[in-house]
Image: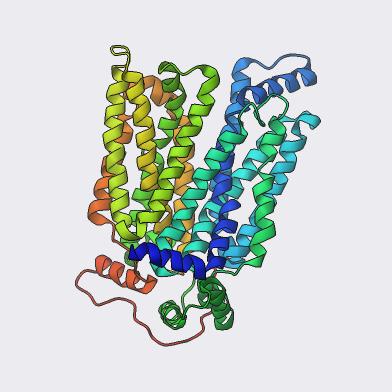
Length: 500
């Protein structure tokens, strides 16, 4: 109850922090989830448009296998763009700052919306392909910069809950994309250009609201060496609260980073002082994409059909899967500061292992018992709930909390590049895995879930309620057992701007 009162009190005092969360999220991870899901509804319409366009150009229809090739390129260019955006996010966050990077990122959204909106009139499916690449770049930048911006702007006792909102906006984007893609709204054969171009709306909302809100205080002080701007930003984010203690922590963190420069991504793998951090980032970042959550979404439509849900109702049942993830991330946001990061990750992957095992059995026996499809359907919802409670949100916090100001942008580049590469490879290999393993397709993902649960429980340091300096000292002890407390506060001195 005390924790809930503290959050409520912070919410009343820090309305600017709440607005900052919403403004960053609507044009950040919301765009990722939204553009990931809206492409499903117009699949057949875009394929027909591609075939008709080719017929108008050459007088001959495009062979079916080439239509599927063009469609696969349209889909796969999104994670490819996300990879490029993840590599771009680090330099942008350092050169422009966290807030300005999110604002500039909307240039890609505006260009993509224009390409989508005029693609049918121009008779060009190539415009759709380029648009998907651009919204992918935007998603890659937003998914990295948004949690960095929010994690650096939040007070330490609410840092986990605030950073978890990135997962909430991702799930909200997924659900909104599914809703807007209903055939009764923009999922019809004539409205698909508007459906794809609707990404312009959240981008416009961010452009209208985010300029009114403060930059990350840590960026202003540590990267830019501007104590006055840092204090002004903190005052706006915290309201009338006493800032003396937090300013002292920021000055201490600044002193620890004195004289440093931003790490480059490849340097993270060479430094022994970052060994535990990089291992956690690679293992858990890779596990989030290899844990099988996407396969649950892919199997959902087939399982719903086998359970007897009519084809015209399946689209509504599919919205329930996105709603489960949204509900779970909301719950995780409420309990993360009480339960801690390690418990949520270990529990989330452990539950996914259990539900995935039952799901495999249900798929294997679905022809023997009439009620097995219903059991499989329940496992889909339960597994997605388990993913939302832990891995979906907590993984995004790791790069913020485990790395200091000098290494954080590079850490997000590594994590983002890993995530988008895994997403691309899983999407590419999934049809072949499904054909080869059939009902046992989830078995490889079960192994990943088990490994992630074991690593989270045994090797991931708990960061709940700790300042960034305290986290750095604990990680130093883990990386150099038997040595001292780690980086010490050497005094107040303005450092030069970091650069990648």
